[in-house]
Image (cartoon, rainbow, N blue to C red; front, side, top):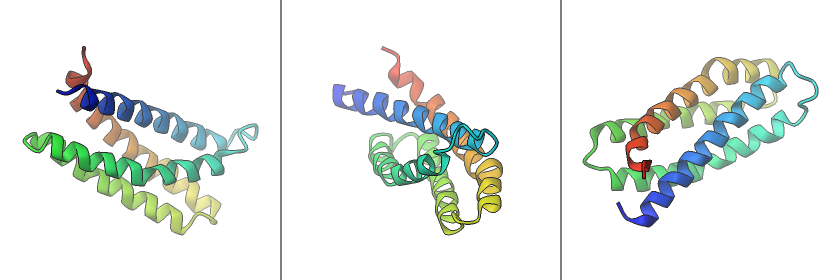
Length: 125
């Protein structure tokens, strides 16, 4: 693996970790009134998805012979569908919270675990 590819993978994994932490904060903000910037953070998370999709396309090219990685990249499409769904009902707080808590965040977290597991061997130096 080339150095720039290794750096891309390392930074990508770091961003995904940050996004998962952000999701946790957002969900916590539903009940913790001190966390009053959850909606703002949610917009930032959703706004990051086009960049994630762009990196996913690079990874598809890099790992085109790895059928598990190809599958994981296609699972992201379901995560993106949840993001799109959430954007459509963002003004409806109860429904937004339910989708985030019950569908979007769990799906993202599961996808993140899959990709993290698959990329770990490439990140061990």
